[in-house]
Length: 321
Ligand SMILES: C[S@@+](CC[C@H](N)C(=O)[O-])C[C@H]1O[C@@H](n2cnc3c(N)ncnc32)[C@H](O)[C@@H]1O
Image (cartoon, rainbow, N blue to C red; front, side):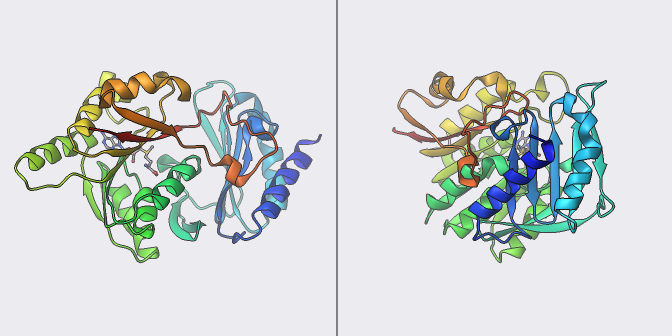
């Protein structure tokens, strides 16, 4: 099948399936790599922005062709293609249509909630579609709970939690710019939450001291979504070196419910992380994998295991002691 036919079939199929969505503003994955027939190719719509990621460097030679097709399918949208460079392999090269403005601030909608989208790829775009299942889970399980959102980035979990009737939400991220961005999305949805610029490890250590002196109460649910690579250099750049510290902080936090998202391939696969969690949180835990959201968006072959794109593994973990 011609690439263009494959892509329009996939887009039409998704839009048809998701008839109730607002086509112009929805955040939706439109093409899911290997599952949809092209290994390493993801296409995501963030409202007016159509982002194509080509993780397989062999695809970069088709960039112009993809751009032309996307321009004709989405004549009014901003199109950005991020392609892994065939020569340097690791680097990405960006191409765009004439509607693209690197400083633009857009909006998109997911499940009726609004998010502010920035088009500058240095910071990603403000919402990660591969954690939609975790957002849905949190929204449905946070009523009247005090939620701590660690590694909050632009506070997407904080927004769904407040809309899911959480009692309170506290967002933690060392990057003030991301927290400010999260505040804009909160304002779009007329919700209020707390946000503090800090690292997870420093915040958890302070929380633990404050628990001892009675100044803090344990959270009811903690969301943990660290990147695989942190800011900094050397060993401190690798999240896997900090997991023992984060786990200790979570264990000491007095909290019994966690949503943990593993973005780090080096930690293992979804089905063999049980020892990792038991070592960190204790033996007496129940681990429930949260199914990825791609079947919500829909696809014919339900296989998101694309070697060119690591989809995070998402868990709900309850601690019994
Ligand atoms: C994968 S993003 C998190 C995505 C976010 N949970 C969401 O749903 O959009 C990783 C975030 O972790 C933050 N970060 C990096 N190192 C951190 C640390 N030590 N403690 C807390 N946050 C950190 C980064 O600034 C970035 O915003």
